[in-house]
Length: 107
Image 1 (tube, rainbow, N blue to C red):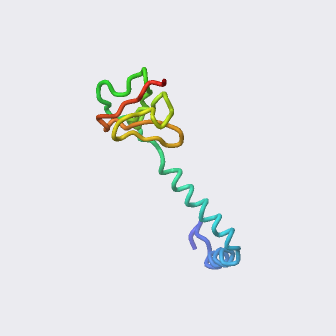
Image 2 (cartoon, rainbow, N blue to C red; image 1 turned 90 degrees about the horizontal axis):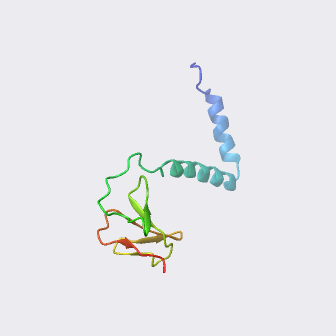
Image 3 (cartoon, rainbow, N blue to C red; image 1 turned 120 degrees about the horizontal axis):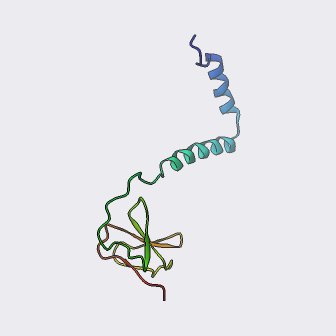
């Protein structure tokens, strides 16, 4: 028998324990395992993309360090104009690939 492998009886004990637990507990375990996988997959890239000249003027926005997005200073749904503008979680921003996007100065 190998050093760290569980014995067959141990494996059956784990299966019996899983089958005897409540559905709520099983669901909770699955949610925790799924959350761990999603959280680890959401990292930003290690290197920043080459941003075009004039991208995200400092007067109206701030460029992100790694994702190539411009976070508009005016956090409002009208804080960005253009075809690729996004407004999510109260943040107005656009990606550098949008050629006609720009942040609007706060009124």
